[in-house]
Length: 460
Image (cartoon, rainbow, N blue to C red; front, side):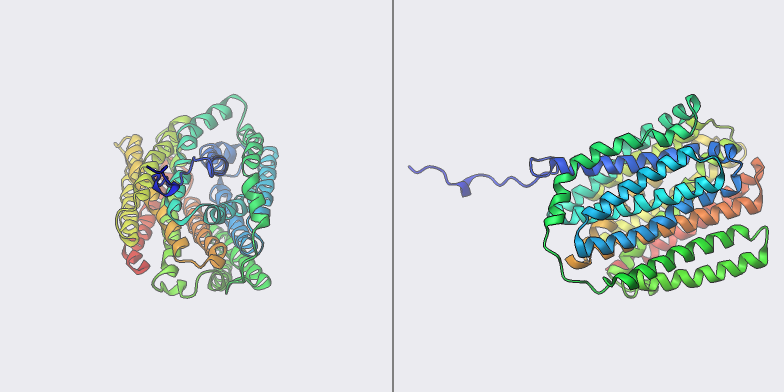
């Protein structure tokens, strides 16, 4: 009788929280949790910020400033990650994020607050695209769906308790401490990711990809970010100065299209099959969901008389659906394009149900089941798009395509929220007018979501 050989031992597949990946997984999830908490907190306290700084006209732009600056940072960070690794963009991104949080808490004018939101966006954009590349480089292919499911699940706790905590902090000490309170939590996340960051610094440099020219890509990112900013500013001014508003809109759109032509995979603007359409699906999902999500607290508070904490519950419940959808995605059931079609349909149905919340005689609490359905679609869709994009990308283009993914994500959200803010300004700020604006926003975003469901077949 011979001793059992090592080959006879049962194979133990790698696990996210196994010895080899435990610290990296905890670090990634903590960073995502902080970004998620910031996003949920800002959504809840923004009505208070707008009133305190006399900036209700800038309600939509405060979100868009964050998203547009993230767009630029995504591209630069993705480019650097492909050429030199993800460590530097991740650390710089976290530093900018912390700086932006401190500036937002200290802001005493609307201009300073918008500037702080832009700095936050630079930090969040750089660190998040670095996280995507980190997942691609640290985890083997068969672990990535579980990793993205865990990333989506990391939104659950801040989404469930974040609005309540933010509302309590804002009520007790003021909205400024909602921003200050996140800053100290960045340190443990950075410490947990140090081993992975050192691995990135020591990694072998990959050959340049087709979209790795630093100057050309940086200029394209600047054109897209500036174009989106000018476009949103122009749309926001249409109700005050129609001629200048139209001129800014046209110029901004031209710069934006030029930048996107360079930044996105070839054929994306014509929905070419495969990777180009896969990347664009992220934008359709984000525009549909966040184009409504950002205005739910405003609508419930101004139209239905909800308090800050009550309005935050609707956003909280969306996280439950998001978590369930992310788990379903991790099971990898069905073809990716079918999962995205299902996801876009769920988000569209959720948006149409949400518009009922501002109708006379209908309780605002209908937003709760509506946002569970929408969250389910986002949980399935966002992770599926990320996994599919990495699978369709050569290794030396993972950073560029991760950046392109986030560009469409941020741009879809920014344009939808900016257009929604402009619509609210155009219709008016009285409760009945906000209700009308919210109804129109929901209908427009439902059209976007339905279009995404139809175009999902071109991911094949």
